[in-house]
Length: 191
Image (cartoon, rainbow, N blue to C red; front, top):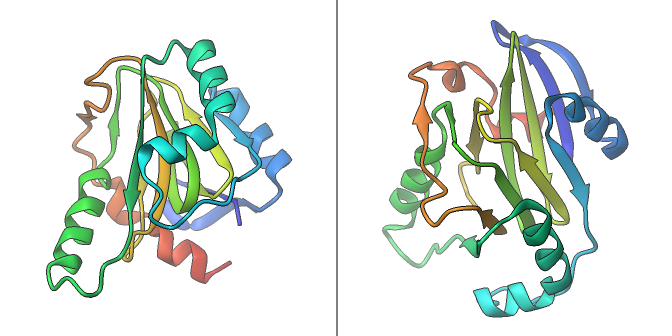
């Protein structure tokens, strides 16, 4: 379920909008230059590698790359591994890397092949929490203050688009706002 929850940045309990209607979500994000699209998903094996994932979405990937000038496209996959005693620490480390508010010098563009994640976009005095799931393409413009939560038990596969090889360079704001907002898991519980 794709979800948007808009909250006051000073009070997470002050929910200004909560919707699962994709057209409404896209319309709410558009004035900020954020794009949300939905693509048809392609059934893939759970262990499909980067080449297989990119081949399955080749025409869409090529279109987005050409339109946005993206030179590098890769696939990020996180799958729980309960047989590995290190898995909880790995998951926690992966999650924490993205949980601090930051900006980038280029667009952050992700297509969710499987699983889910939540982008938190901080515009003025509001936070837009956008839960993306399989089939969602999210494009966040360069310079947008945001963070990302993959949940306590991360599981997703996403195609990532970059204009430069070092595209995921974060400029952290130092604001602890992410700690004051509901997590992905909390957003889903109240769904």
